[in-house]
Image (cartoon, rainbow, N blue to C red; front, side, top):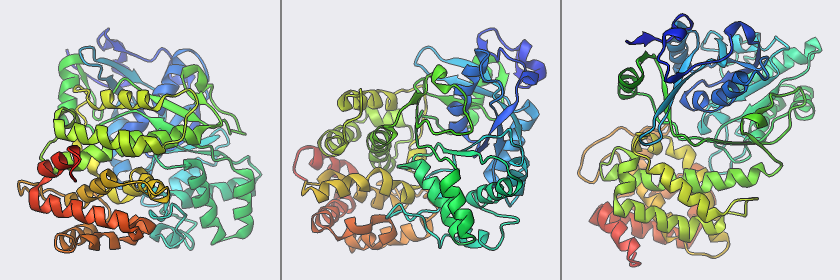
Length: 493
């Protein structure tokens, strides 16, 4: 029998479905989370659910928040089910489902951030966590520095009463707390950005610099921004996942989350206003977050980019199918082993080759159903962090970048918007309107794509990279993806 997910129906769900062992009336909110997407509900919310199930830290429940249109859609989906979420872990042959109840509310989503600012008047909210994507931090992709010319920043400098950007909302809330004599909340970024806590601080304080230097000093001196590394492969939810949930577990959930069994969270212990005992749920607290973070960004996220574009050009839809393709998998193995991993600094207690083998097994999990279009999206924000950072390090050391240049050429060819077979697709990128014309122009003049200096930065000036990029892109247009990959794997690129 199928049951709609809500608090009233919890007891009627199948016995094979895990359910909260705590009551909603036992929880008190301590965290406001901005950007309630699939990853957050498969990650931070699950760690908290584990703590609450153990009877711990019941005053650290979540309140959801957001500004984007997508946040409004998520709120509308979760409200009828009392903010509950079904999380399905996709271990091959042993899928499991649990209902998490760590979220107790979701503030209204407006076109501006006033509901967020108002909610943060509550001193019980001691942490604001963020998953607003790599592109949401108002940074220059080529340098990673705060961009004061970002449209949201410019707007919010004169609209702090109704800011439309996340960081404008945070700054307005911090200013109100300061003026009322309340302790500032901690800002905890959970996005895939190097030194994400520092980047979040630069965005909030950088905006304050444009408005009130005293407020900027307050942010830098009084507000904590811990760095973190987060990891769990969490594909987008489609009708496929909803149907599987009904068929296998008898639950009708408006927006369930399907994810791999693996999860990891590494945090800097910098929470002056307190925090939940997340170490009891498996979180690693360390002063070496940067090492874990760089390892993950280069090997896992860089690996995602490595397989996304050749697979997309070959018309492959699922990630596990890409991993089963000898040329795509061969490209990943060779690029990771020869060019990426050798320039990843040591990580305490981790053997990098073992970590990569774990990553490859995770990518190949057929039950996850992760898609190539998801991995390929937002390349203009992801390439500088996940691929070009490795390229830059190797160029500085005088090392070869044949494989990395090929990866960048594959991204360029993908930005042209057609597969090798000529099938058109929509480029999912906020900069698509300039990426596609540049990629098409590069068909005749390959290095013209490198004129996107906000993306490539000084990498575009390196003669070795330019020549190898040009050779790879010319081959992709002339001979196709398969022949180009085969030539690279044979050592004849």
